[in-house]
Length: 220
Figure 1 (cartoon, rainbow, N blue to C red):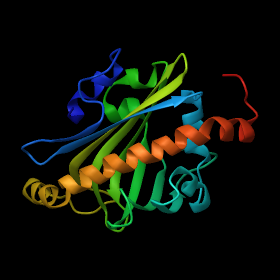
Figure 2: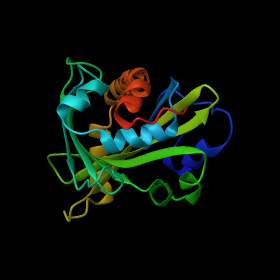
Figure 3: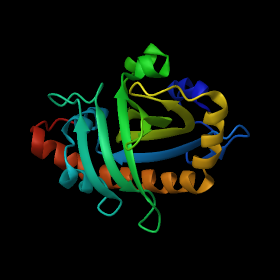
């Protein structure tokens, strides 16, 4: 799946590509992860991204890969329009520490389809950027749909969208392609797939109890 086909997630059932990595001749890569979350609901994931705070809470999500967490521009638990600033390993401490700025945006506007704001579930979408330089490297969406037994999360990471941000000079197409081929490697995609599978598995285990303890909202 490429970014331009992201609306396929709105179709019933499953797509041929639900978990793994996919590379394209132009240097772009897509990482997909599927997580089934018994006894969870989409509303719990919406709450999670608004409640998640500093490093101590972030480590609940992945005790070994997650190293640091802070937020920029988030007020009253509203994550859309804010940025999550993180340090983390991807797929274990044998690799580098990734310092990222995840810029959350309204899914309907970001993904170019208002239906993402309207279906029975949740879409959490963001640009993936480097924390230490004003450059983005990808886009992501966590597509959560309710099921009779809970919910399921279908994550997609679209790697290779190299672009400047925060008023930095524009990155021209030739330089963007060079950076894409240097930075968006098979190892990065593999590590991201492993990390996403692990962290969402942790979240599926802890979220039903944590949500009810903190919010007092008990109906399924």
